[in-house]
Length: 448
Image (cartoon, rainbow, N blue to C red; front, side, top):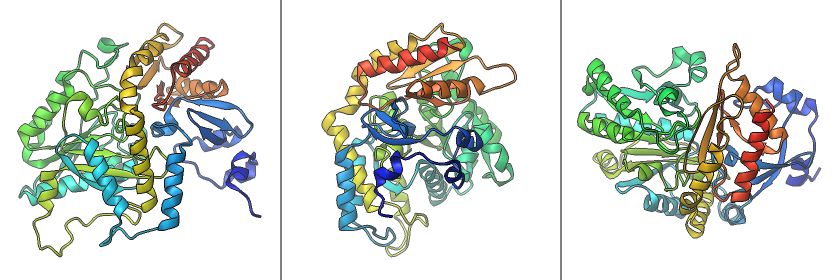
């Protein structure tokens, strides 16, 4: 059968056909009894296999920042595949990898100027942790092996990222296999003091001082790095309190600890700047990123490091490998082509500035849902927002999941994070589409 891609996309799937695929982060039995099958996408919309139009309120999965169906990207990918389908990344190179590294360097915070390519956000985190540990060893501080994460953090699903993350459901099944020597800072979410904050909350900067407690407990000489998301996305859009990131930077510098920002979600315009580090005026030592790097079109991630970190690795014999780490598909030509086309769209269309311009409208729209049934908090920054609900007694997470299902039935795609609805639409969303998204959310919440 010579089927075209659109033939596969448009057709309905039988229950038997659904069974073979073990779906990630999905209630498989629930889904396969009532599947939600997407057939194609364009702009800020998906379409289902049965022809319904769905407004994409989460940019796919926090990643389709420039909108769906960008021909600039698909054409660049096709041309790259025709020219060279694969290039070995070990001991070999190709021009697109170096071009993309330089493009990323140009928009990264000043001083972060070396880029290591991977295939996902999870891989970028584990790569950054390896780099941090080896950097401390190269500096003559091999005792620095401890890594510090944060409660309610999410750093992907590899063992390193899972260990540093602070999501209980992600950690409990693999407890015996967790990376040793890990500790966690407290999260910054404070409903009692910061509910319905617009932008950064007023209270909570002092929570960064918990790093001093961990230094007192373990001694600074044992701590290699701290990793945090500037805005914690997957646990419900936790915006950093004013002064919190600045204090964390100050303490890491004081104690010789590397500061890693996980910008897999916040990177590439979500906050109105290329990276949240620039938006909040705090420069980490390492940034991890992925998602928006290729507009979600081809899997790719990256680790961006300061020159002094890179230089520390470049001290041995010239013919020796400096970092024994990498992946078969690191800097894959197709992914690099997608990344280059994506960054060109961001620049040509001024999408980062567009976020700043439309953010006040977005803020007012999402906060208009205050007072609806079950809502206990609304928070936002840039073009991301969360609505938090009072949990149903004895059934934590049910209200959030039910809201996700009902919203999809009403024609919008949002994301459930426990009893929280997260929204992060493509950066190209128009005001009338924001109105549709929020009005539909209001309809769903009023019907609860």
